[in-house]
Length: 356
Ligand code: SF4
Image (cartoon, rainbow, N blue to C red; front, side, top):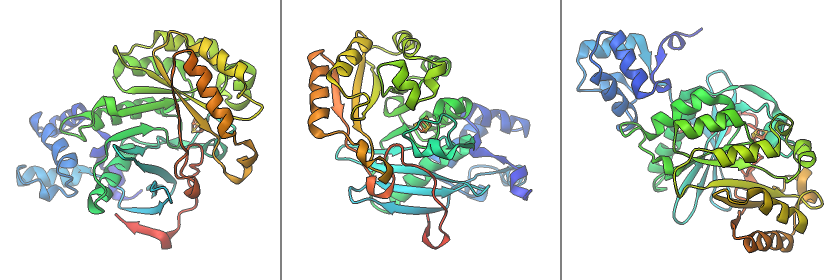
């Protein structure tokens, strides 16, 4: 084990945990809050740069702690402007984050696990199987690295975060919650909870816990209106079937005017008929929600499964007749395998890696 792995990685700690950490080093609580601001607001990477801390304390920190960061990445830029970052972790695994620039926002799609255990059949990450959860630091470091890259490359500011990258965020619940705490803390990365969305395949108990503990937005990958179809593409449905999931959405503790986002990928002959659209409207009736309709991404294996434009418009029209807010989401980053369901942590290529 290398020396720095024995030190406490301060990027794993929320403000409260930083306070406990400095108190364990016989320092007053406010030093913990100062550390948080140095790490995230000022982006400091060396303890010696923390000039308002006593020299003696900085020495203590150097022995007891470290601040991990992602300093190298493989970066691929799509024709549509999406940017995929491949980050190599300290144990050699590679994870990916995708920056999606739009006119009015810059959204980062963040990963929470290496691989995924949920096994959704349409998802390349699911096909990798599950290796491990990401630490809080590894989740937060994706945001820090992309924020810094944007700053150095005049790409504006990161405005929104979606937990829709590799992995099922709610299966890594504690680290997800700690990372949200750091991301939203004023002295931390200072994102509004309104600009953070957590997407789940439908882990009901954790979903309800998330709604109680935070005020972030919730997105549900629904993709089918009957259990037979949904279970065949999303094995999680066998444990948490549609009726239970929808019931949980009705109970979901969320503030007024907030709406759950339902993701529905249309696959010809599987879930794209007029009857499916009417059934979807029936299922979601009276749930404050929005619906995102998607076409399956055209990875070579999937090209035959792409729904026609006409069909997707018809599906949207039916849902609109039922008074739902429905968007057709354009696939982004398709050409660099950065679109939803395409993140598979390809081999790390040392020759293509860039210093951040
Ligand atoms: S879609 Fe999400 S939950 Fe399903 S296998 Fe892929 S990463 Fe996991």
